[in-house]
Length: 443
Image (tube, rainbow, N blue to C red; front, side, top):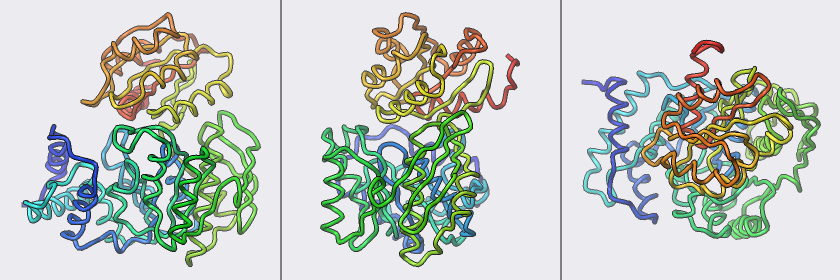
């Protein structure tokens, strides 16, 4: 019998069951290659862009897809993790994969996993199965372009089985250090693992150690490197509650009066990287983007929970910041766009993150913090979150459930205050879904 959608979800959930730790080594990527081989190698059919980095890779990937779609291309977008619905990870021209398609593809992958039993490192992980589902969906469409966000690192990530036309590396910082290394050069080397011989590379301004690694790997591979800040220039014209206005001077054209409807000055950098990428795609034969196409694509972008204002009076922000680098961006927006306004912070952080570093950045900006537990088995206990922020915030409360936490924050807030729920996709997702479903004023 064909698998139903609920059965597909149950199968995926089963892949998240606790298992013995797996080593971070070549076998990780070999397992994904074996799975793809059993599926007929759908990844080889994809004209693709790979996007790696610590901060901004999801937004940059979404912008690349939006511009390409505005130009008339059929575009697949694979990102992770999801906020509420696992189907958010696999989009075709902006639309989530249909439940029946998801079920059929998961069933197909499950059959391949059974065939591969006994292979070293078997079975595949949740992330590897979802990547395989995306590759199958995009290959069958077929897409003109697949924009694929890398998971952890790059060199050994499941998505690195794709052969990209362009490899994009966004801002590199410290995250997943227990896996990819604690030194910036180590982290950059993992991200640079997505660079291909004679390929094309786009990157943004990096710290010197990371920038040098990317330059060295690109040169060794004979890859053409485009750097935002050198070959590509941009200028932020204005930031505000409606997003960012900017101008980008690319290698092919000047793109004026662009509007990105996402909060934060950092989104101008992401937009410049996206434009550099679509220009690099044109070097490989894709249609060159016009100024009008770029403007339309960026202007139509919708990317939830990226410093997203979901309510007013009080202003309620939901954001998926989950590492030091992303919290630096969030803090910058709070300081610039919401300067002088009292902040109530709802914070839940996973156990593998730099909780102390996150607290040092965001807690001094808050007048009150409600420590909560992210909806994930890896979550830090709320008491640990509370202990981390107390040196900077006298008013700290522990509320285990994120929904109860945001409701308490709303009751505590004055109309002119800002309430921000953040720390993890597993905090932002449930809270955003709750706030969107319940009209303001309804408790």
